Image (cartoon, rainbow, N blue to C red; front, side, top):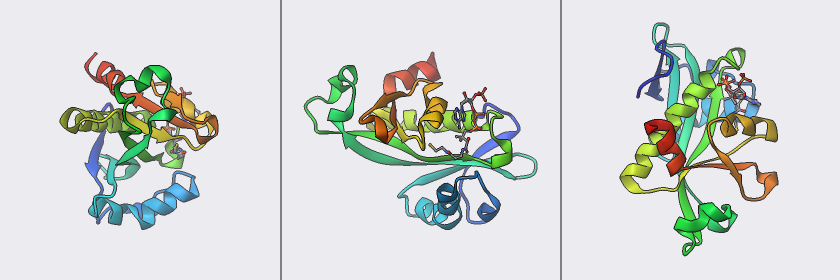
Length: 174
Ligand SMILES: CC(C)(COP(=O)(O)OP(=O)(O)OC[C@H]1O[C@@H](n2cnc3c(N)ncnc32)[C@H](O)[C@@H]1OP(=O)(O)O)[C@@H](O)C(=O)NCCC(=O)NCCS
């Protein structure tokens, strides 16, 4: 996968990576990465991509993706059109995205997010899916996703956002 930052590469999680040293500051995400990511990646329940430094191999961050079905009724009116006859729609869910705590606000998260969008777009093109979905941890963090075109859907307290496939196409193909 291409990188926005030439010093970073995006690679599949591997068993020899030092995942226990990684901390993004969110206990639940750090715990999952150190205890479950490798197993989940190996079993294909999630696919985990690591952003690491080309020279040192140090882990800068990661994202975890999986296929997800959600309720069509939660979509906004204009986004329901393609699925209105079906009770559920499929998306690629961004289950986790995290950057090492001291590196926050240096655009590494944006690089990881764009890498995840590229992957989700490939899935949509190859097998059909509505786009990418995510549950933001809080309303502030939702802004990170809105910046690139995600829109809110579903009950506000669930902080669910979606990036429809046609917005992905615009982002990636112009
Ligand atoms: C969320 C996270 C991945 C963002 O990564 P990052 O590298 O810090 O983000 P970026 O530098 O690419 O941010 C780009 C823009 O997104 C927005 N943004 C990023 N993090 C934000 C946050 N926590 N709250 C609000 N806006 C945020 C800002 O507009 C930022 O631009 P600015 O720095 O010029 O204001 C990172 O903060 C992180 O790992 N947090 C802990 C784990 C977590 O909460 N994951 C998300 C679960 S939903």
